[in-house]
Length: 217
Image (tube, rainbow, N blue to C red):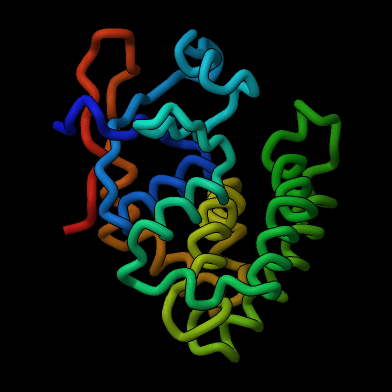
């Protein structure tokens, strides 16, 4: 358990934005109290802290609210960055994340949820794959990751979204995704840290225990 004066993280286990925030917090070693929420029934305390109503939301001991996933990542890594994820936090990284959070996320949503968007999933799968082929080539020439041979901010910020894309049709992904991209994704998804931050917690209710964010062993 964490101390009652530790930061509070509102999160939803399956949200890729929340995943990347949890990954950075776990890597930094910052002690955080986890409040797992259900997005269709958001707790009043979360909405009071951040009326935008999306996760992640990090409430610091001072009362300051950090409510965008990339801001949470950079806040945590500014505290401690033992693996050097910020070493490649450059305009190149910004461009990769902007592509992921913009055109790739648009294609992902319309591929994964065609009924919601009234979209042709195959058209958007093709659009998403085109972006991913560019990432795969970067991974091939950069030595296994997007910017450097070791993971950096771009890899951690992007792979949870590629994971969603791959899981939409796992058989198609296995047959069609470029090999460097598949190896990159498998390495991140099977890492001890990712397994740790995907631990399941019960829905938080006021007065309920607030477990510590797990760290990789």
